[in-house]
Image (cartoon, rainbow, N blue to C red; front, top):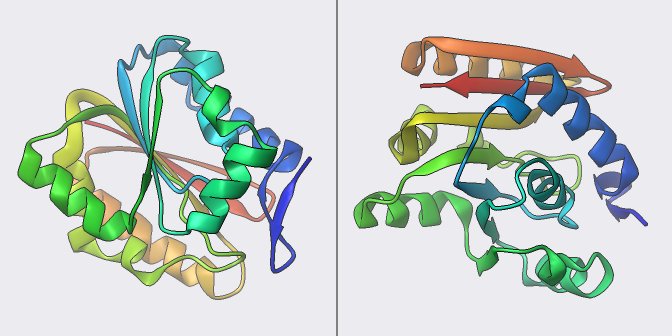
Length: 184
């Protein structure tokens, strides 16, 4: 089963293929995160993979679209993934609330898409700095971004933002996607 929005895959075997290759490229299986913050739910592909890699991980998963959350629960069995908490909220606003609460995460995944579109706040330095504040000292961040059309230039700009905040950045390109992996 796959989830398409405006013809763009949001979940399913193709998305699992992309994320699995990125995770393997970044050797995340050698990490031992206790908790994860996942921004963007889709059909729950990333959450399922994280649970496979790390069976004891506790995941907080955020999506702005209640319909997507409903679809993920009903058709992709999101609720059957252990230790998962689903939050219906705007990711940009929610990360700011988490900062005020002093929350930190060992793993942060940013997979924010609306069809083939990436919300503009994802490319803002202020958002990346807020996410940095949520990352535990030994944590890692992995972002899925696009690298075609207008996103080719934007992804280069985004890399520059990452370099201005973090010292350890690795990239992996596959299909139309550019994955960024950051360690503290």
